[in-house]
Length: 321
Image (cartoon, rainbow, N blue to C red; front, side, top):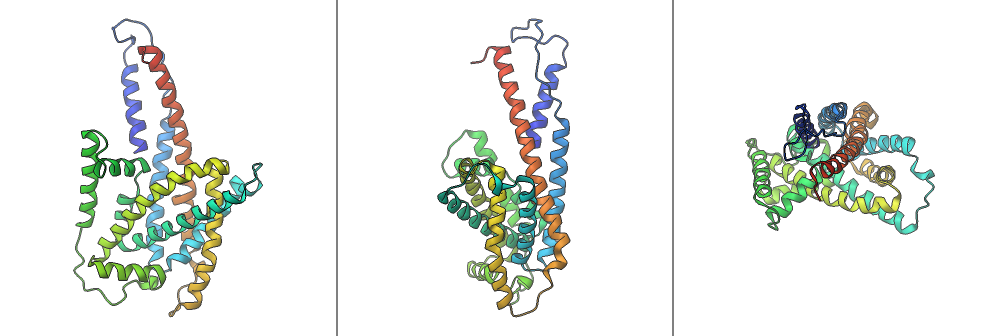
């Protein structure tokens, strides 16, 4: 969505630059100086990061078919915390954090860990393609659909877009049918804990495997938008969103360690060694989390600066208030 907005804005500006005599609304031949639109490499960089993120999601889907989601998430979070800690150095910042802020960071990390577990469980049930179609939406899209459908806020355009979003989710639900008879516990390597509970909840509601996975991913998407909104306020107290993300990854790793140890003690059947999936975890940590986060943040910063310049240039050119 960010790529589409940037490309559309660049096309509109290039059309306005196409004429040799650009001026005010009244058609005068006054020259108009527009800010530079040389941001195509940012767009390509964002598209490349999205492409590698899709590859990372497919790698994660292949991995969670053979290893428990908690083990895999622990590896991914550990690698992310190492990268964030090396790049950001969140524990050596000049701003000393108070105890209340640390409690809020721990709460934020715990909720984020639960959402990541739910996302992996939903990914294991619906597959990588439907997970990408459902999960790759900005927070503003989720909030716009929520306000338009449930609260009736917004014009007819927002309502039409929200209805198309709902129809898209329904099409994913009706994409195929689970005709095969389910076994007693079809979780495979996920026959434990949260996946076991999700299986019983889905069996109680009568939803099929992929339908329940879509419900889980949709719930995760809505909760993620709410958590991100609260994380922006917490980032002000911490000292920046990048430092908050690094601290969240570190605390999430601490939360997952005893959980993974408890699963290892109580598991009935032996599972493959977690270190065998270290290359897949490294690819997921790099493409899905680290690389995508930094490139997305850089493009958003460039995007905001560019349209800030365009806004003030339009005010000067067309006399807007």
